[in-house]
Length: 362
Image 1 (cartoon, rainbow, N blue to C red):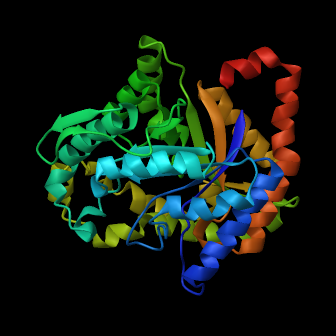
Image 2: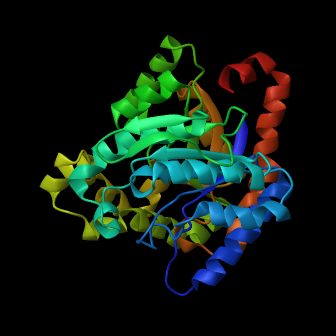
Image 3: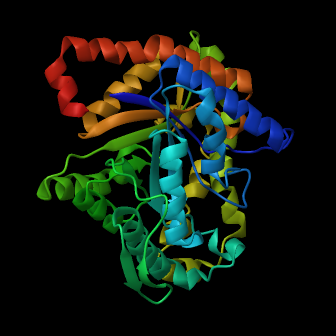
């Protein structure tokens, strides 16, 4: 079982962008020192309360010389807003600059981004499908050609050459097709934060069945916002504003979304369902009781993780978000420390006692 950290880098008023990047830099360096396997950052544009992270590769490049072992992961590169051959070239370069410590995912992106990026909403689905095909041609083949609606490539190649090692590749989203493809291709999937297991149980079953059919092992990463203290009431008090902000920030771009008809026609019906708005309005106690966020003592969080392991075959990694909703930097470091000191060792000890069980889940 791996333990990692995931950050949306939400940027709330009262803090400069420079300070935000400096604080997250310190959090990554601390995570490396404390033995977390990976630091993941979303790629997201235009909506700072959701995320202020338009270029994770640039952020990771300045971290590589300051860390020793932690992996860096982009969840996800949003393909419709990249030239796929240029993105493949940048990933090949990152393989060198990050010394083989880079992992990435690719996806279609949120439905509120296309109008801000100047991409026609009705083109996004077809553009993503074609970009995905061309991207992997460029990343996996020495020479490649492609003819499609958006791109025409004749006998091209990328440089630096494609990575020689098998990279851990992720896809994410909520569509059945995404999960079937991930299982077929042997990709990992990351469960979006805020969603309890039941919300994606059907899609995860599709993923596991597809992986089994094609001879691949499922590789599921579970992401949850987390805050801890030895005293449960102190934890709940200190985390409340950050967790409320986290949910509100995730729903905030919906205020500027396209029409519901346009979103549904483009395959973004999820954003018209009202689910995100309902989550943002969830009372704080219900967030905790309903497993939307993890807030409490180390024992409380251990219990939540054990429950997740019990219901989610194929779970290989738990990722916590420690800087949710613009929470104070010292609180982010505090949770990283407590989790490394008291939560991770619990599962490492369990694995040592029951290696056959540990092998079954990771």
